[in-house]
Image (cartoon, rainbow, N blue to C red; front, side, top):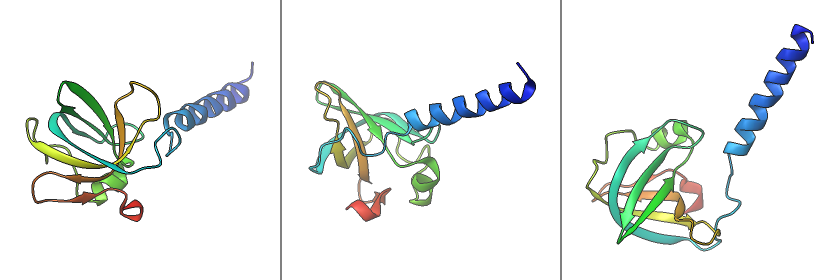
Length: 121
C-alpha cells in the first residue's frame, strides 16, 4: 500500500466515525416532553455533542445537548450546574425501549435558562 492509499483510508475512516457519532434527531420521539431530576454528571463539552446525566426517581437519564460550540454559545459550560442540583429539561426522548436518553432543547437549572436548540422550542 502506498502512503497516499493509507492517508485516504484514514480520512474516510475518520469521516465515517464522525457520521456515526452524530445521530441528529433520528431515533427520538416526535413529542417534546419535560424531565426534572438531579444532576449526577455535569456538563461535558467533549465529543460530537455536549452531554450530562440526571437521576429521575431510580432511573439515570443520559442527556444529549447540542454540539459543544452551540452549547457553549447558549451560555452552558462545564461546572455551571453542580452535581446534586435539580434541573428541568425540555426535549425529545429516545424511541428505543428502555433507553433513557433525552436530546435536549432547553436546560433550566433554577431561574436560569439555556436554550441549546432555540429554533426547536
